[in-house]
Length: 213
Ligand SMILES: C[S@@+](CC[C@H](N)C(=O)[O-])C[C@H]1O[C@@H](n2cnc3c(N)ncnc32)[C@H](O)[C@@H]1O
Image 1: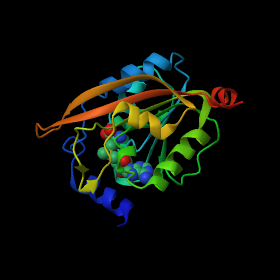
Image 2: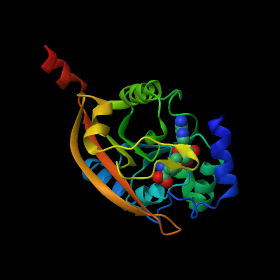
Image 3: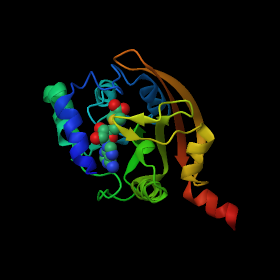
Image 4: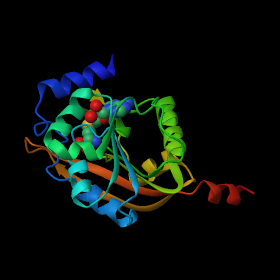
């Protein structure tokens, strides 16, 4: 299946506030990001950000270096239209998180809500973690949210993998120190309840090399 066409169709046929993952405010992501990114000049990327309102919240909080990346151009267009002139303050990237040419050691915060769980093949997850390791600066933070063990088994017609905090952290390995995990009960626009697991990790590549020595 062509995933790009799939996601383009989703955003072309469904209003941003009617998709199951819609949040009027990305409250928990904002809280956790503000906890670690105390400098408003922190370089933040929201991968698979789609038309999420996280970028609105980050701009309102005063962050000035924000990148939103997604496979779907239609999703990014929705977000840009909503932000009107504020869209010019954001860098928008259309691309696949697994293969995108991201700058090395650039980002202070890597945020992903509801993208990693679509990676059902081990090689996809390995490619994803390699991208995080490439794009995040040592000492930067990865905040990744997936469906929890008791969350849905499918989303948007696609299979997903579900994670406890330990299992999600385990996908990233010892170079990522788990600072905090949270569970969130998301209520979809149609009123269904979906459990999410959030893991906030600090990327400490040298620390794990020291342990191995
Ligand atoms: C369930 S939505 C979540 C959107 C957003 N993160 C949020 O919380 O509202 C999944 C998003 O990931 C994007 N996506 C899926 N696979 C992707 C990939 N390989 N690279 C980049 N974006 C991807 C989709 O286009 C979609 O916008």
